[in-house]
Length: 216
Image (cartoon, rainbow, N blue to C red; front, side, top):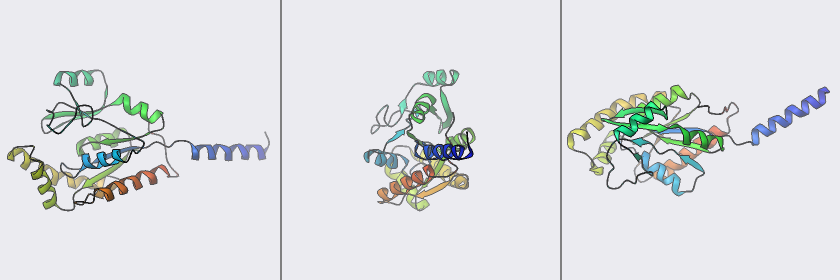
């Protein structure tokens, strides 16, 4: 092969790599009450071509939640089997209940060229960063602590002692913001702008010169 043909092959390979699918794994995290669920739901309503990971949990289902949509609600025994069989990408105890990310759906989505969106707590996000260094991590937060407390009170899903624990935990979790790639402030009544910012981050990450595929 001549030098010219070698150069042509390199150029062709470069263009092929630039036009091929560049799936990214995105972690949306932050304290309770910042709007992680609402942000994910708004992205889904836009029919964005992402695979949204549904977390498995042992906590009881709330009246407004749907099994298989908000979470996979499973028993403690079923969760233990998933741990034993290595079926979870990560798992953690959150406010006394287990939560975990099933592996197989994440692998198949990335292999098909789809971006993967994970909605997980700050503790789980730290685990994902260790397992998948090139995951894109986004810390979602309210515009102030007063606003966060107001949202938690409005949910009316927990007793006062558990609510106090969530507020105290949120204060500590905010200190972990420096470990994330991006921060997005989800202001009250500005959910669409929050979604726009998240989508802009994803678009920028897919355009990185140093993009590398996620390996699980």
